[in-house]
Length: 319
Ligand SMILES: [Zn+2]
Image 1: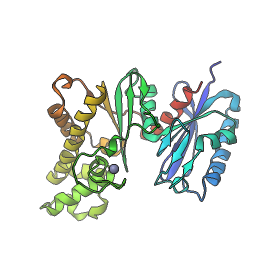
Image 2: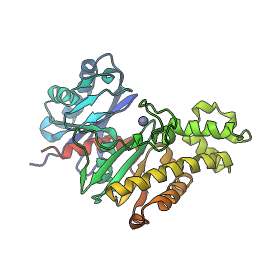
Image 3: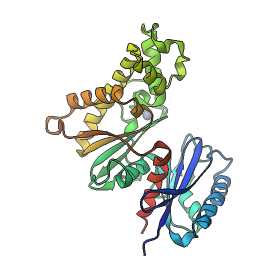
Image 4: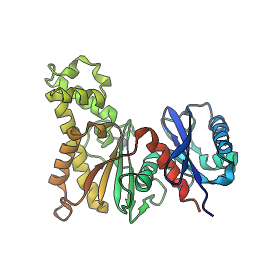
């Protein structure tokens, strides 16, 4: 029998957001707690109290198909969160989190990496509805990806497939948070954009509107606002970042021939300033047989809901 609800949980670096979602993709109840905790056990206990309250509020666990969780370094096969650097209780250890939540709520739980959850959300409720081949790229503090091929998310042999943010785009380039050099994330994440801003201003952009900011903490929103006022350095920051992204996309396209690449978060809100250079580079560097075939789309899910919807969509797949 089809159950009317699922629960979606998104564990972010700072906050954990969760909600009860119905079959039409409406969030009918929602809540939030801090993600930080001394131990995984304490965190799970605090979260479960909130979850069980929401579950009771809408009629009890019999009304639920299950719980879906999106988390950094979430492993779909094992239901584990593995060495997530931004989550205090999962740093340097493997936490069997799906089992812990299942034990505390009495519901089946599916867990995956946050970018994979976003891809499932786009496929179920968003711009990728009906698509069988697309790549989701999340541009935020980090750069994540979810790869859908033939209608299914690619998890790989170990459950971690789809780390396109850590594809090396510049040999011996910028240091990346992963400990290596030249990753896409080091150029196109929030900090990557701030670093590009710093470089361009130091190279002679002292007249830029951005020069008056604390340059180590310039956000893509600041750059966007400056670009809107015609600031050339701001426009160049998006151009440089967009060209790096587009060239990487041309390579991704050669792997899975996606119908679309869907952008979500941070930089994607810079609209044409980022989309035009991305499109230019995608067109320039794509192999002939792929040219002009892959759409570049922006997620149309409201940012505040997308993470919960994405995680919840995973729970409809629980058999
Ligand atoms: Zn990296």
